[in-house]
Amino acid sequence: MSASPFVLPPAPETLDVRTERLRLRPFVETDLDAMAAYRGDAEVCRFLPFDPQSPEDIRGRIGHLIGNTNPEGERGGVILVIERVSDGPVVGDLVLFHLDPQAGSAEIGWVVSPAASGRGLATEAVRALVDTAFRVYGLRRLTARIDPENVRSVALAERLGMRREAHFVENEWFKGRWSDELRFALLSREWTPAS
Image 1: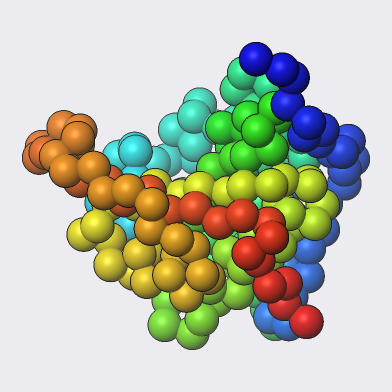
Image 2 (image 1 turned 30 degrees about the vertical axis):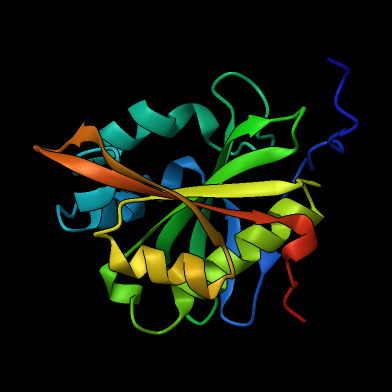
């Protein structure tokens, strides 16, 4: 088998992404309390691979990624907080992880505060993450894994034009039940950047 023709560009040293209503930036130590405000909510965590989190739990799980802008490495990834431009609070976070540099692919994920729901902020934030993954990180393919009962995240992936590639039935014992998993994907050539 020959080597992959795909080569990632160097990761940016800094990252500050702006949309009309939001700012995405790498998370820092002082974001832990704000993140715990929504990551500590059992309903928010219902479909996430962790139970409600305190600031210490968040530090233990993803603290090694504080300030990181490089998705490479065994435990690599980029966590971006979502801030509202109008008043500055952190209303969610996004992740770019499970990088496969030879394939130019990575997984994306999102966690958004219920206080920010219903206004299109999650769609705006994830759209900016996808755009950043393709434009800044030079990725070729993005994936997302979503429980089909998480109808809001399924709808968000579909709004972004992600393709449903697989439905794994009862593939994992998750939080007291056999859960299904949907796999969504998007290629850079299929993406239409925001204007």
